[in-house]
Length: 278
Image (cartoon, rainbow, N blue to C red; front, top):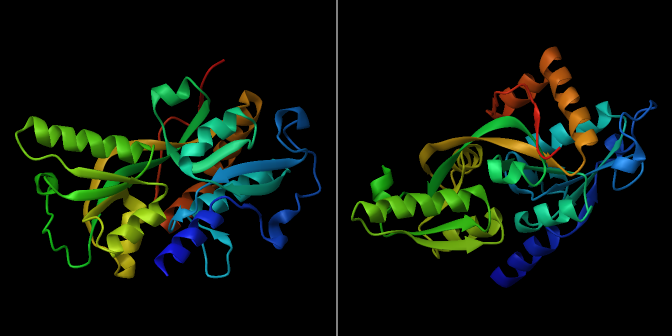
């Protein structure tokens, strides 16, 4: 049964999906981005890994849901483009962007200067790392030092893995036992491992850990660690500039804050400026 579940998750994450029928048609207006800057004419193709409820996930009907999905669909609408989503593991997103498989990474990728040298990035959302424990918090994790020696799961290749390794190294430098870090293809599999007792904690982000806590699945025992802005990422500077304008418009009319408030997410500072190679 567990193998079947993991196979289903893997299949879902490699399947291109389109916006719901009610949202699939772009409005009758002139697209703000030329087709030469897009993977598909008249379409905004976005990559996402829908394993992070409530920000991006698949509901019981197999539909993409969450704050980032709503944001991407609204951005496409305001650009007069048809939204299209590709479900893919995070580790494939940056190479796929460079290979023109999609126009925009819409998965809350954490901003770093290294990444901004490779692609166009717009910081739009504030986030921080959080730790979820097994139900009942049997390891009694109350502070960072309590992570010493535990087996912890995290998604492969992301900011969360980097921060987990930094925390583990800091523990070791202070004479404590480092964590045993296990990486997984995505957060859904990492949390499944926590449920199965294969790891003792999982590193994710605040909003995701809070959602699992709210559901009564896994308590969020630590949060607010290493706050860092998340970003949208692009290959095309032209597209990035237009998306930046849309975010500024949404911020001015209050719709962006209203969306973020519904999900308990904070706006990043910086005015949605595009940062990347010229």
